[in-house]
Amino acid sequence: MNIKKYLSKFDDLKDKLIIVTGSNSGVGFSLCKHILHKKGDILMMCRNADRMNDAKEKLLELYPDAKIETLIYDQSSFESIDSCVNTIKERYNHFYAIVFNAGLIAKKNEYINSVPKSIWINYIGLYRFYTQIASIFSYKTFIFQGSLARSEEHTSEL
Image (cartoon, rainbow, N blue to C red; front, side, top):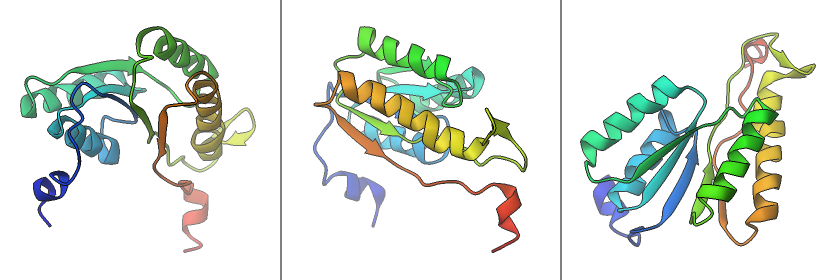
């Protein structure tokens, strides 16, 4: 089915802000395109400012009138998570939904606080962000996209 035909089945998102983590590439970037196609606004949350700004420029080429804001977000850092939660609370409390899309495929022997990096980012960081934001905005829509990414050390078992 043609994507525009598929998207036509959904209501417009005019004046609705959707927050998307990991929105500079892959599924997150594609989701941003779909949200903008439905006239929604987006807050892109990414850990790399250059890649985020490049993605924002590409989206604005496709949708010149789009409302796109950006926020640096690193799901491996409690400091970054806490800062983003505070920023959302102060500046973006009118959001319609958050799509938790950020994740990582870690290389072999990468750890954060003695925990494999994939587990830390894909579970512990996500859990910290979600529990803090849900305690403030329990009435909002939260969408989880993704699964645990395997590290290279387990790839040979497949």
